[in-house]
Length: 579
Image (cartoon, rainbow, N blue to C red; front, side, top):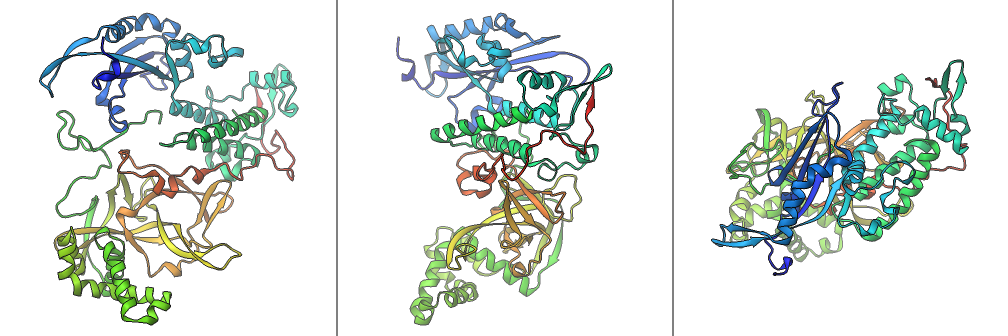
């Protein structure tokens, strides 16, 4: 029999199974277990699309199958064994021939409870770790934990504990009795209160008012806050698309310390679909566009507007600033920026010696120079037609919109009254800045700027339209700071230094959200979400997005213990619970 790896058409499969209640959180108890096969022959942005996942079993019932799941899986196992041992004769339409198709089941993917059901190992109680059991390494199949499912479960447990949600909180009487048995955290031990038991308020307990105005940084004491934030940083790093093995080892050491602290203090959307533009036009089934999917337009170069637009007239000054930014930041003009600088140096030796004067002259004269040279430059430019219309400036009349979709993200202006916040943006720009607070020497560095969208404008270059955003920027010097691993911005400081540079290209925008600090109303925590349906790897470069790097929420400088603070496991200004 030929080697399995010799034919790339042989299937490499992964099995995923999990249960859910189709009646959501209603009182009806019911369990439905889908068993799916994922084909890893496909690239990452296709193998997880719903049309490429095979639903092999659907196990319904009043309760979960538990360890009896092997009975339901028996027909599937027999088919998989047949595909591995003998294969089946199938027709290949591409080569117009038949071949023997074989398949291999490489692993399973589950949460911790499903792990136990499929592997036959115990995953609860004193011997809950399946990796520590006898002959664990001799299991015939590799069983993997779904990190995003585990992350969801941990998130629900933390939120349930902080808000004391019935059925979700982990801070119950049995947990307090465990602390008593272990002889730790004596302040949290349960106390007899007549025929009932009193549970003292822990340091993570929130009052009713605090639950209504929830802010992790503004409410929780430093110990619980740092523990939760370090746990968030752990998952942030673990879920990066590329991760080094040495980083994983360091993460393991960090999370052990974090979990130990959580145990000492007693603090203990699931599905990711990799959208792709691979089948944008013809897939023969569902032609509905994704919510934030870009679509091709002969007129608009990038993205598309949403909501109603209105005509507007731009003053000469505003038009000049907007057009200047376009010329200095579009790909088609990039090669000619350096060409203009070289001509300026050759024409005036003073400019060559004075860098600031050179840049000022370059900024003031580039648009005129490009317009004069456009006839020659279009002959050496691959996109000469676009360059020609860019050089001749846009119309004074433009279109203004309240919403825009680009790069898999939906943006709105600040004035749009919506329940969701889509006006926050950030961009990274190369600029000259001070080396440090103490070192006044100038260095070139990439700086992240944060702001909110005030206007969305489509500049009309006669043959095409180009979207730009007009923003209200936070002061990059005194209006941005880093605390406890988070980036905070002050959106209320004076922005006089940015009044003359309010514009940037819509294609450069990265969406961020701002969460107001309760104890400091002028400062906002910066939160970032990846673009919706924009996971095609060659389209979204994670390393070039500063706000997506693991250091953005980092464990560096997150010291859980502070020798200057007295550790307390209870909170005095909040009532405990009688059970």
